[in-house]
Amino acid sequence: MIDILIITPEITKGMKSIGSKCLLNLKKNMSVLEYQISQAQKINKISNITINIGFDYDKIISKLYRYKNINFLINNEYEHTNQAQNLITYINKYRPKNLLVINSGILIKDKIIDKSFLNNESKIFMLNKPKKNFTIGSSLSTNLEYLFFDMEQSWSEIVYFNNLAIDTFLSCDSSMFKQMYLFEAINFLLQKNIVFKKIYINKNNIMKINNAKDITSARIFI
Image (cartoon, rainbow, N blue to C red; front, top):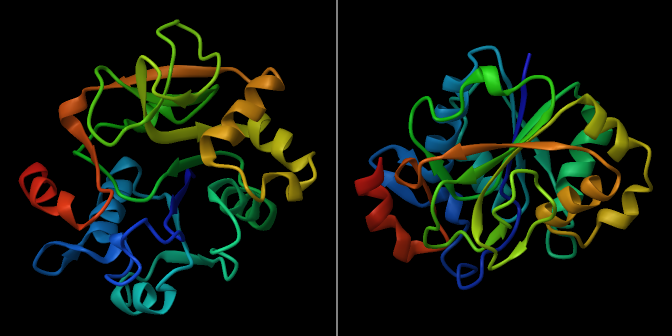
């Protein structure tokens, strides 16, 4: 079984008065988060899918009432913690053997992440060309050395951790991740000699929603 974690707790800049961007409607009866769930379900029909929530958590749970096989992990400290803390909380609670993580607002098309990718070594999903809203990346080297802002090769904000990577997280003091972004947690693993294989996604098969202004493009995308 593949564990999938969709991280959504944060208040996106400029969205506090509007609400969580994961609740923005892409079309009638389908929010951003519901689209993400539908794509996660297609990766592997027996996946264990958990939605990590914080801001607007009550509205999100209410919106997803018809999804019977979805787990919720609530971060009540979402205003004082960052992405990596949500990841570590999940790992400490569920002790998964493997884990695919998808960040908030990331939309993919069908069959972009084949279940065959989700085994053996850890994987980092990169875009084949730069694209708007994807600001974290790596160098053009074959091996992933580190992730940071405004690098040559854009990261999709999707990552797969194998058992070795998860055990490395479990061996550390979880408090050190409290203010880390997800990419910083990946950099931490790289410093511990965890290897990530690069998997390339065509930039036309993925997009990121940062705020309500991106919804028009997202409706065309899906």
